[in-house]
Image (cartoon, rainbow, N blue to C red; front, side, top):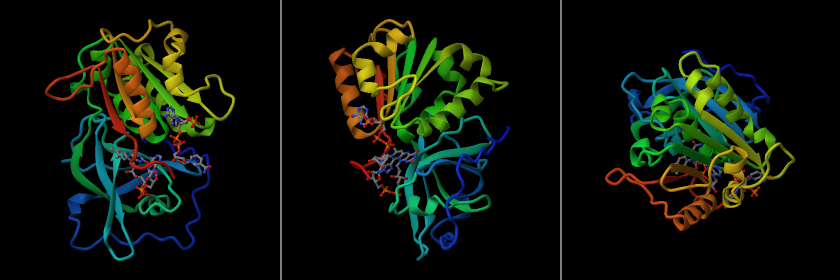
Length: 287
Ligand SMILES: Cc1cc2nc3c(=O)[nH]c(=O)nc-3n(C[C@H](O)[C@H](O)[C@H](O)COP(=O)(O)OP(=O)(O)OC[C@H]3O[C@@H](n4cnc5c(N)ncnc54)[C@H](O)[C@@H]3O)c2cc1C
Ligand SMILES: NC(=O)c1ccc[n+]([C@@H]2O[C@H](COP(=O)([O-])OP(=O)(O)OC[C@H]3O[C@@H](n4cnc5c(N)ncnc54)[C@H](OP(=O)(O)O)[C@@H]3O)[C@@H](O)[C@H]2O)c1
């Protein structure tokens, strides 16, 4: 498939004294390594990158895998990362925050084309279409890097076969932090294979909380005051018809779950599909 072009909105971070350590010897099999094929820095704390995809690597839309790098002692530092690319494509893509002193991302931010990355073969996750009952509309609610699993789900034809309308809401602090989701949505609408269904069925609602923008406000507020549905001429949230996937900070996840429980939405799992599912976009309270 066509590779995502690298528009390089920002210069890559300084590489001067930050060369990556070689992958650990012995601890990782060759099957656990992939090569970086593209890197795009969207802001000074957000970037995306692509790798080759091992032929045996399988995943479902919305799942995450453990990826990482070796530290200076050759020890693997791995973290959970949602797979942002579609399950049917021949490359893998990830969307990453940069945590200044983060054990992994303070190194990962310096990756370049040709570098090796650790990719563990097991994938898992709760943002799974199989955990949701059938419905009319699917709401995908994300803040920050919580958009990553939805970058995969909005490119999965099954999403559009299961639901008439898909409403993707991406909440960020600033307009610049929307750059990645804006590009993925625009490319998906123009895609020769999925473009028609994406254009017809996907509503994209980017919202910003700390700058002026066409849509402002936290997702929780947009949901609670009914503005989100009314701005799209959709009926208010209804557990009979609407299904929800949530991926953000623990605060966002809890606040939305509380709103949904008050409207009789039930959380889904594999043995008992429900009305909504939740995944934390990261572990921890804040940088
Ligand atoms: C299921 C799951 C999926 C994840 N998917 C992604 C993903 O697709 N992209 C991604 O960038 N991260 C993702 N993460 C977070 C990721 O696992 C790491 O925490 C992140 O890469 C930072 O690693 P680190 O070692 O540099 O810092 P860590 O020591 O892991 O984190 C330090 C602190 O930074 C903050 N933080 C970490 N990650 C984020 C984030 N993404 N957004 C906001 N604050 C954060 C938290 O407060 C955390 O305590 C995911 C986490 C989980 C649990
Ligand atoms: N030092 C800095 O300048 C700086 C800048 C950006 C991020 N950060 C740090 O980087 C980390 C990640 O930042 P991030 O912007 O990706 O994530 P974030 O802080 O979770 O914010 C992302 C979006 O989610 C909103 N949000 C936060 N909590 C919410 C809740 N309970 N309900 C609904 N919406 C909620 C935010 O709105 P609000 O704007 O209203 O909070 C923002 O629009 C954070 O831990 C943050 O502390 C630091």
